[in-house]
Image (tube, rainbow, N blue to C red; front, side):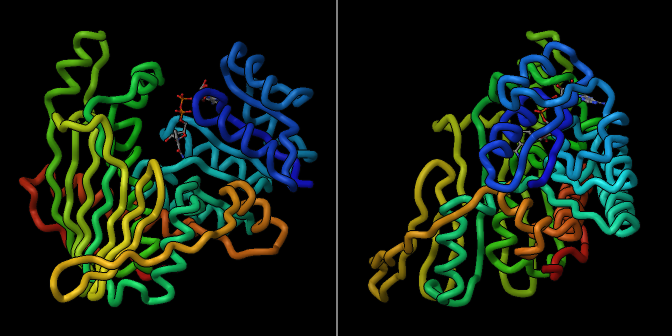
Length: 347
Ligand SMILES: NC(=O)c1ccc[n+]([C@@H]2O[C@H](COP(=O)([O-])OP(=O)(O)OC[C@H]3O[C@@H](n4cnc5c(N)ncnc54)[C@H](O)[C@@H]3O)[C@@H](O)[C@H]2O)c1
């Protein structure tokens, strides 16, 4: 049994604690948050766990094998480094860190420790992702030519305003909807299409609505409302859309569509995967989507630690993802200039 501690017990930390408790090979034996009330409340998810308000004390406990870090992005590097130096395996909530330099520092810390760092891109383990992976492996849609990854909200979810103000300041969070939600879709999209080498990107962020809404709530909304980007490889073109504020009809769009020389696949974030081939007359013939048994991201983490399965995503993939995100923000800040980059190829 892997004895695990969750550090950071608000929104995401509570959900991960429950997910960990449901894993066959993980037991949450310790909980940590600087906020005493949240710590006490989280005992509902892991009754009998040891309680800590100082993460250093968790790292010093030799009876703890692994830590789940569900902390503000600004703490991913520092607490991640401390956990690894103390010999703990780490399940790190996404993003790996706020920028490429911090990701590199974490990868160095991981290399020094010989411990595992798995980043919380749990959508890779969803049923639709596994179904799409199986169909793509069969060549069901032919050669992949383009992909769209999008997570657009019409207005920021209510819980985002309740998160600490760290979230609204790009210097602390690393950015807005692109690094927070768009990143999930981009990670999964790149994973499905085989992490091609991204040569260039161009991006455009918009601002204004969130600032106006935030002012009314006495919140300093300094992140983008929306960011859209094109990523170019020597074969597949990728469109990325992300927003907290976009005046669209639907409350939320949350999907990935991949098209190829024969047809396409769509993963609806709320529902099922669908796949089709396109006939010469433009009509489509649906392809049967296989039933697939899946496991959760934390089950995967446990299996990696037990030596049963290979780690994915790798920290290097998460670093490459961050290269793309940094380049998108750079492009947008420079009049949507085309930014050359070298991200991808690592599997
Ligand atoms: N994978 C996903 O779907 C998903 C969803 C939401 C959030 N996240 C990620 O999870 C992380 C946490 O997000 P959140 O919404 O739960 O944030 P949050 O601000 O709601 O919660 C962070 C918690 O960490 C605690 N904390 C802060 N500093 C601490 C310290 N030094 N030691 C111990 N505890 C400390 C805070 O008191 C708070 O309870 C972020 O990196 C976010 O990007 C991932």
